[in-house]
Image (cartoon, rainbow, N blue to C red; front, side):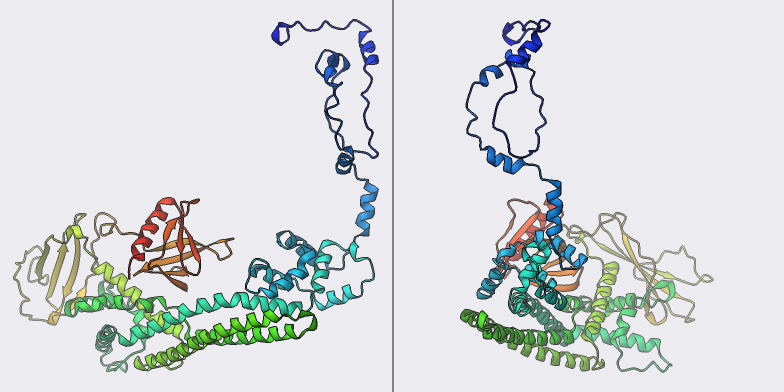
Length: 585
């Protein structure tokens, strides 16, 4: 085919012309390498193609004469297999195979070069609270790979060339060069970890104190207990369990498991009686929010943790003294830094200890108030009451669901049906509204039935109570559900649920359960279990992260909180809820 531009292709070579062209185009001369190089697998042009192309003209240019061929040879020379094997035989390891392999796996993620490891540890003692040199996770890793006594002896008695040691051996050898390494790492680790341990303990102590105060001051709860006592004494009348003046609180969680005729639970009956006689007591759970959250708090554990923190401060001072007294490690600023650190936290810790002692005394008074054994663990005590509160609220929602605003003005129809026994009255007889309980000829032959119907948009919901002799009522087993699911759901901003919380080091996301109420954001490890901390949102800036629309950023005084929602819509809902609660005072 013709070449671009209409130029005809060159004529094919005559026989014998190929060898002639090859003779006038011998291999191109150039500098020769002194060693074998890695080849470049290209396809050279044939001489007859070179003559008819631009390569013939370009070959006269000296544009590439400045190339550094010595560097090229150094980068791309072939390694001699014999030399490689000899070099491999020269390297030595003194470590156990598994130990060496674990260190080799760890070292690529360790940010500090081995050459400056000793200097870095020295510098970090001068700025012990500075994370720019050595972070907490680095200290933990170094503590994990501290040389053993056996390794110390191996490296001490090694007479060979230390330059021939493998990388893992070099790492251990560098650690051995650091004087008082275990003491140093222990000091750095304790100082870096202490603030978070202290900060995590304070809100737990405050929550336990609030739970004790709520139980001590709640007259409504004590009145509910009196109802339970009266019901229990009636059921146990005539037995050794009857005529009691009080009971162990552990029975409260069993009320929902105790069933009568029609599978009506004793808890349902209790709520029905409260609704009929003292409706205000149905709301007693609203004043016991702290108790519901304190189900896993151990007061003895809190006091033990306070004692551990006290010992850690003493340990910090001892380690500092040991390091400073070493001639090669004297650092005047280190003592001053550590002294300021321990003095600051010791004052705060003394205040927390005083609160803990008072709270423990208050808890003992609480046990006496409810007649519980003095040895009762607070975790069992609070979890029992918290479980009862949850059962109480659940049963209340089932029996007396909240009426949506749209239907609050609709009428509530009350009809009363008088049922006679099968031999006296027909089941189809329709009663009048003003029907009263008839005279009873026999205690067990007549029953009084109330049917309360609440009209809602999705359909009727009926509660049936059966009245026996003397006007006592029991709750019927059947409760008609709304025809449409979600009939009583309110369109509120989300206030609780799971979010991912970014860790302090910013390297991971931890799934946590968050609960937002009255301007406070509480979070747990799982749903209302393993309480972690509380963040007060008042006047805190809240926004969506510019790079990730699923992340909510809360700017607190001591740190920035990053919370990640499952999607953008949920993140926006949480943002609006946070903004609403941040305006509460």
